[in-house]
Image 1 (cartoon, rainbow, N blue to C red):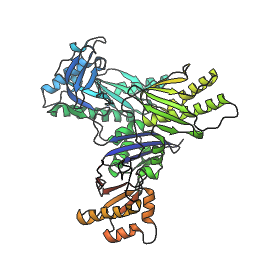
Image 2 (cartoon, helix red, strand yellow):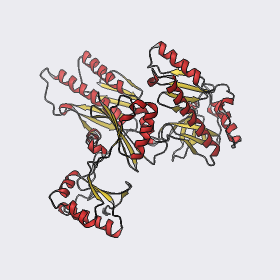
Image 3 (cartoon, rainbow, N blue to C red):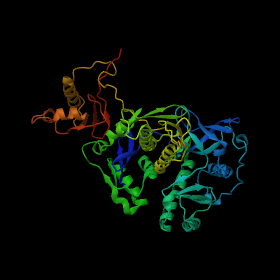
Image 4 (spheres, one colour):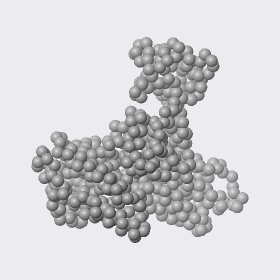
Length: 524
């Protein structure tokens, strides 16, 4: 199986697409200005205690207060609280964590009002992003994840991933970590650390320890609360860390600065694979060039078609996700209705496992498969679903089909499901239902170009249009494109973009920032 990763970055957002055998299986996009991401650490204040919920609300700067439950305080919270107090009492020099005295562990069945009080300063880490009407979910168990290990301040245990089965390898890794871990730090050894040498583990340990020290130095300098004191150095690297696999054939990046960040990161964790990171310099948008845009438009939305005309209908609600399996206009199998239903359901299981990864759907998912009467067929479908979900990194649980033909799946949810709007609103009429003559569209573009060059003084820019419009603009020896270049200068670029609607257009300056040249249409 060939796996390739594509990273598209612009001033507004970063998008990452993972393909397996050229088929899109994972897609993530993040706004560059987004905050409150999983893993961010804040120095914040407790705003309100909720004894009935055994929890409290903490102000981290979000429009809704973040939620912190007693069970998320961490067993070593007393040590954390005392150490933070010592650090804040002397802001000139950082109190060494190695000298911190380990306090008694927190009671598992205790009450939050005996531990926290309103206005108290706490170090909190986001473990779940804001979803719908809910604010972020917090934890006081701070952790610094790396590729091979996770560093846990004030922990005293070395844990090895349960996916590493060999007892000798587990013992070897535990012995190595015990010999190199700093005082008052716990370590979780990740699955990919299997077979790694001491030097690699020690190198990452030093990198993560440096992040802890950098974070605490920001605590010393914090003047206002809440304050963000730790976040990933790069969103691209943060998104890539959990997705990266040394077996990737290629990683293509279309942004030069992010290309160097990704190259440095891969060079750090897998130096022998640094050559797979390549900068994309093509004229077409990277996702258009590698057929990602078409797959995104075909894979998102309410209805998703898969083999032989069958399709899924995916609905999102506040409480759960509902998936309905339909055979569509599929012809009846020669073996009868039961064989037809099994074939459609098995195909649906393949596509659904891909959709869960692609959309990052979490929480409760209920799937209504086509009814099957034979118990062995229902068992075959359940086993197929379990096998498909082995590729999923998120924690999940799958129940066999109920007597109503429903399958229930729970999947770890730490951020809102990815929802790409594939329906296009007419950019010309804005939903009114009438548009100007399409024959005059190129005249509109010419007027916009004239305004940019002669009135606004912008001579170097890029015009993105639909591929059909691009073909029309470029046709002929003395094409419209050539006329524009002759009239307005050679620094005008016209690029086809599959993400645009038929009569939609976008202008970008030389720095990649969009120039708003859209017509203002009053809707009555």
